[in-house]
Length: 310
Length: 271
Ligand SMILES: Cc1cc2nc3c(=O)[nH]c(=O)nc-3n(C[C@H](O)[C@H](O)[C@H](O)COP(=O)(O)OP(=O)(O)OC[C@H]3O[C@@H](n4cnc5c(N)ncnc54)[C@H](O)[C@@H]3O)c2cc1C
Ligand SMILES: Cc1cc2nc3c(=O)[nH]c(=O)nc-3n(C[C@H](O)[C@H](O)[C@H](O)COP(=O)(O)O)c2cc1C
Ligand code: FES
Image 1 (tube, rainbow over the protein chains, first blue to last red):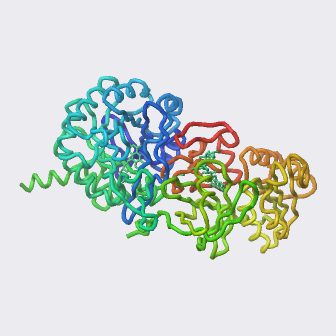
Image 2 (cartoon, chains in turn brown, yellow):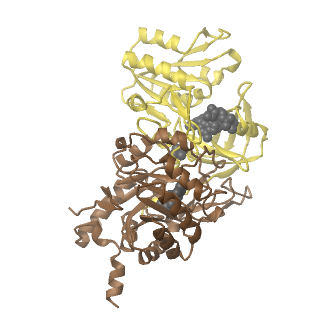
Image 3 (cartoon, chains in turn orange, blue):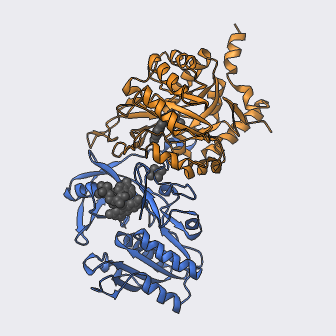
């Protein structure tokens, strides 16, 4: 049997599939449910300083070959989240906190006040495409903002720090370098792309109440894959591949391009929460077929080959 | 390519074809739409520019879909302003409905409020299979009782309770069920209504060792098992796909049942 466990920024995951933020993950018990379904680890739904209701619904819908969402960061706020996410051992796998802020100081405040040592790591999200005041709509997708936010969060926590970037921030290698220089331990690439618009032509309105939203799922995958490739070649810290990973093939593609692990979100829509177990089995099958002893042996190898081939 | 890539959940705009007043506060909105649902499933209804909310399927004739809606807040008030011919978006059916259980020959159904409609749908199917049905319909007062006509057409033993005694038995739905359980061996109890009522009936059934199917409503945003709003504590399962209808074994694992539910932002609210 090939070894499918991975070690990322000092954290051990039983397999490389990690729940992406904002899909399930509102409660501790929903994380438990995801791990029971085979996830190697999980990221909680992003938490802000105050409670947020989020945008009115529709908050999400499918499109041909993809998915659109504008949830608007609904969450119970820092104080309630602190109570929710305790005794995290019950979850059965590493739990990664996800924090958002309107500026670098608020990110630092979140890191200082939310993060208990029970979390395995923290992911700071600089990249939401559809929530005014946060992410790319607040200018957090530039190298300068990335460096400032990373530095301020770094100063407030000893946990491994992941910076979650937008596929719209280009050249993305420069964003990753800024995060690395400021003390990040890994890059999560990517958030959903866009924002995009999808109308109902009979309602003559966008379906998403917010009017536009992030595009995820298969439509995002080739773009996220190229971002992973760029980042892998730009920095020494690990990169986590996120965007449309729906089956083993997609996870392997991300890893061949340099991802040390993948996060899985929209695939829960397509294949249910069991998707984690399914992807893991499909990865294992590939490793056997191709004669790899460990999933770690495939990370980034297409680049080595390219370099070797001169 | 596997079939999953073909999933395409988005609302379909359709006109309201008729509207039926059920009581002071509840109207049924009808659509000419073949939804092919199971009793107890629900749809998401979108009013463009307003919001999108879950509603149980009250009628599914094969060609007509009916949703019985109680006016309780901003969305439903907006819906009540719409007229025949106005369009809303519908997607679904979603979730797991009530099912016929092997060997269940004598059943009790306990409904409150708009929860009576999904029960009527499964009851109408069970009648075909010659299942004996006791049907308890409860409300606070006579004018709030729902679907009495439809209920009277059902081949079943009907019990009506009102808190104030303005119709039927004065008291709660738990009164007739206690009486029934004393007299007869019941194989299964179907429950759909306000959660505290559901909990009271469930507790009685647990004490008597009788299995139940219960519809559990939680805040729902997506209906597709993605957003996590409807995940219940204990099992962590999203009720929009693993429910709304669950059996006693599952309910025993849901630690929040009858205690609290969460708002759209994930904050706990006690019942
Ligand atoms: C599976 C399911 C089936 C339902 N079936 C019916 C039905 O057949 N008939 C009917 O009248 N109502 C039904 N509801 C409840 C209905 O969704 C709410 O009454 C409606 O969303 C209220 O919206 P509002 O803006 O009018 O009121 P609000 O003031 O927003 O809310 C009033 C109440 O409705 C609840 N509610 C609000 N939004 C939601 C939501 N997105 N999901 C769940 N609950 C919510 C609130 O918690 C509150 O208790 C069902 C709910 C679920 C989950
Ligand atoms: C419904 C939904 C909600 C999301 N919410 C968040 C969030 O709160 N925080 C975050 O960092 N990313 C959020 N995302 C982005 C995902 O974590 C992920 O980066 C993106 O969807 C791409 O991966 P996927 O194609 O596997 O879904 C959300 C995505 C979706 C579809
Ligand atoms: S309503 Fe979104 S997961 Fe159930």
